[in-house]
Length: 257
View 1 (cartoon, rainbow, N blue to C red):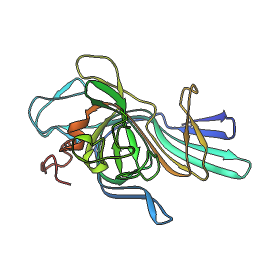
View 2 (cartoon, helix red, strand yellow; view 1 turned 90 degrees about the vertical axis):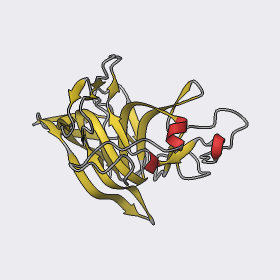
View 3 (cartoon, helix red, strand yellow; view 1 turned 30 degrees about the vertical axis):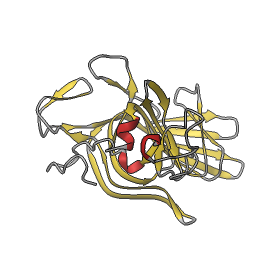
């Protein structure tokens, strides 16, 4: 284990890292984190890390798998980091120095950031989280995901109506792939150092990237950072949604939950 003390602008940090590699596949029936003030920061069912090949010849991350083969979530050097200020412990987070693999869920409430792109009419936009139908962009207890209106004729906020739909319930995003784009043509996904879950006492917490080059500003409560290399078609997202990968030994379908 290595221990590192890191100076910050408003906080002092202590990061404890384990020099270990983990390849895993995990299923969790129900997750509720940050239940307070009449809501939940993160609420999801049927959460899974990693998945199982559905057919022979399925490719993932440049590797070919046969039906029934486990495709693990890869995690390198897990860490816990504490943040302190003049009032004491201001927050802590858990993450990995390197991570890549699939994350599946039936998510009702999400606090944090999902680093995904959305394509629409030949243009690519950053995905945004919304507080609900007609709601504004938010990273706290979001229920929908989509893109901001791109022309004056569109309805402001989250709109789910017909051809003007620009967002969808998070339950339509059934599986994502955590990782970074390597530019490779064989589907290889790069490791990301940005996958973490943080717990903060106050607003305006600054978590530093592991290389110290950038900071991520987060608010009070729970914050989950999910960097992905995915670009999703808007019509697919707002229509049938993104299929769920196979996460059980008995294949339960692409749209079970």
